Image 1 (cartoon, rainbow, N blue to C red):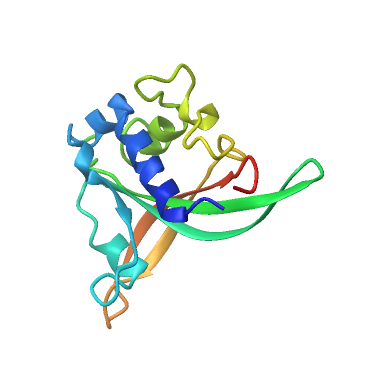
Image 2: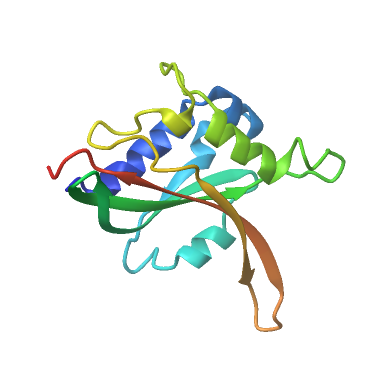
Amino acid sequence: MTNPGTLVAAIVAKLRLISDLVAELGGDATVIDSYDYRYPTQTSIVDAIYQQDQPSVLVAWRGTDQGNVGPSQLWRHQFSIYLRPGVVIDADPVTAGAYKLFDLIVNGTATGDSVKLLNAEIHASCFPMDAVPRLEISTLIVDATGKTVDTFEVQFSLTEIRDS
């Protein structure tokens, strides 16, 4: 099994190579980052999502289970990419914001690749993304009064080519 932290790092590195995505995030590739559990200072993915800078992208490992490729049973790792779009008050929401970030992640091509991320090798130990990633809105309760904020989550998985 490949260490999930290694795969998170590979996803972050690949996203940082999508120049249109970086440009949409203000030209700073470092706003594409990972959530890595670190006790006692970083122990809540919800806090990390809420504290994301705007704009930014946060990659997190969500778990590992069994995947099937033909008759083989292999490791399958689930990931989430949390999107915090920039300000879109005066922009067309269809061509800006979370929709735009999602489009650039799925259809963007990283420098050095000839295919879009959806079909690209993210790590040598894994097949490309298992299926089309899913984008959904999640609502976080951010204070005791019940104030909420929406966040945008891209979910996908990577299945290992073989049990390493």
